[in-house]
Image (tube, rainbow, N blue to C red):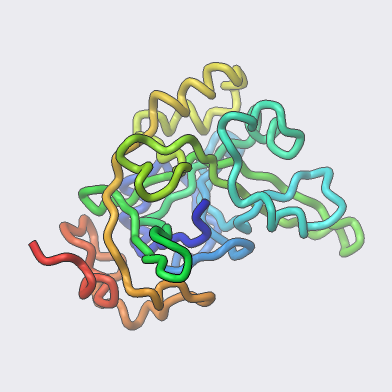
Length: 243
């Protein structure tokens, strides 16, 4: 599955679109977030929804070290209720992972084309995710926060891009997903079938988008522009097919 995310929405718009009560991190644009880097997640903490940063790649509380997170950037919906790495988080530690889009690569080996995937109206959305806290007892009990994005079988419209797709939650599902009192895994699994968005839009992007470092937000003329009606990242916008 994909390994790049993009986030450029301003904090003010995130607060307007998502159930955020408290903020525990600085919000800056990053259009090339990669596994092990910190990404944004919204968790339920003491009856409040907190926006914070979590390393992308879940490290279970029982892990010996954080290296396991490299293999845990995604959690398959079909097995999260049983897999030891995910089952406790699925019952007790669910989160929303806001983003503006993500990248996939299509085509034959050697000629793969990156595409940027977002909602048809370009609005920010939230992946269904799980989060964990791992305590490093060899380093003064330091805390490592991590998360993973849940994936499901691709919809008919998405299958041409990849056989798996992330579970993008509909806004009406946010409260039920975050509520730690909801521990019925069968009902949660049904939510991940009936309350997800299955028809995102995709656009070809320059191959340089497959970079291993974040894009410089200073080169983006419209980073954080509220309620964008088009995708305004200049480097990508140039590659859109003409209508």
